[in-house]
Image 1 (cartoon, rainbow, N blue to C red):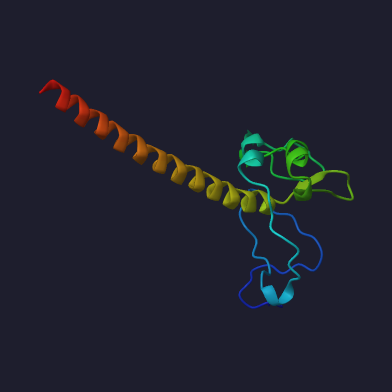
Image 2: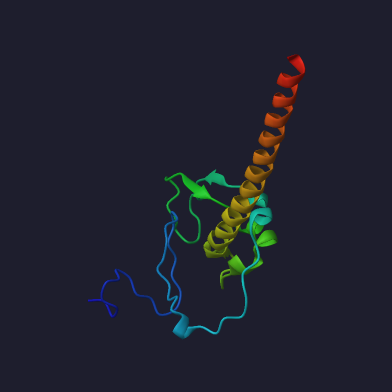
Amino acid sequence: TSAAPGYNLVVNGTAAKTGGGSWSTLSDVRMKDLTGEYQKGLNEILQLKPVTFTYKAGNPRELNSNEPQIGFVAQDVQKIFPEAVTECKDGYLDFNIHAVNVALVNAVKELKAENQELKMANEKYEERLTEIENILRELKK
């Protein structure tokens, strides 16, 4: 039985999970001292290089080497999101994608703002074009 009803896995300490996916984490504001807004966004996301890979056969963590995986290289991510990469006791790097997911939210907001600006500029150009077309029609008369 689980110490936390509704959860399939409860770990006091560390855990590993290959193949991606999400973990549920405590997010209640009553448990947090907010220290600011996370600023990383589109610029950082554009620097990431997704890769396909398989784990090396006989790897020390005994990760399945037969299944193709999709993800990132921790050493590359560490340069952009150092807060997302930790060195384990065995010297290997683990990557927590949460910071990237939060940066993706910021990136979407940035793109939305840029899109709104472009829409407004486009509307102004359409108005000017209509005015020019009306002037040309008048000149042809």
